[in-house]
Image: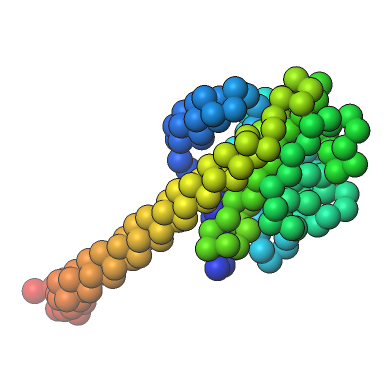
Amino acid sequence: FFFQAEDGIRDYKVTGVQTCALPISLERLFGAKEFEVRLLDHATQRLELVTSRGIAPMPPGRFLHASPEGNGISGHVANTGEPYLCVDCEQDPFYLAGLAGARSSITAPLLLHDKVVGVLNVESTQPARFDDEDLLCLELFGRYVAMALNILDMLVVERYTTNQRVSGALRDEIAAPIGAIRGAVDALKRDPD
């Protein structure tokens, strides 16, 4: 997982989360298996792919940004902070090919304290598969996803801080004994008898 932090995007080695809870929840709620989650790097305005299922990643060198033009529905949603219902991908001016044979999609911003931190996109090969009720549900679900990622971010920061604190305490605790050993070794080197 990646999450936007003050110092940039963090890379989390989380196993099981993206392959278990999120796909199951999205399938139960929307009857769709194909989705992607992108987080916004506020420094570059780039939408970084965090996890996906069934939707091919962008080609190398191609990126989506939080911008209304040329960045697909996800870029539009990240830019406006408003959810978007696409009932016909073939006719939608914002749609960029993602899921092979996609006919409809819903995309919601991931909002944390009313600030866009990413987008959640669900696609289907069925035309007009989603409606306004699905869009509202995805928007609410997206808030929970954003909160969960924020909690994960706080836990990782806490673990890092705790590790730094423990490492510093350990270093301080062994400094005196190591100093004494070094002194004894130096004394032995000067006067081996």
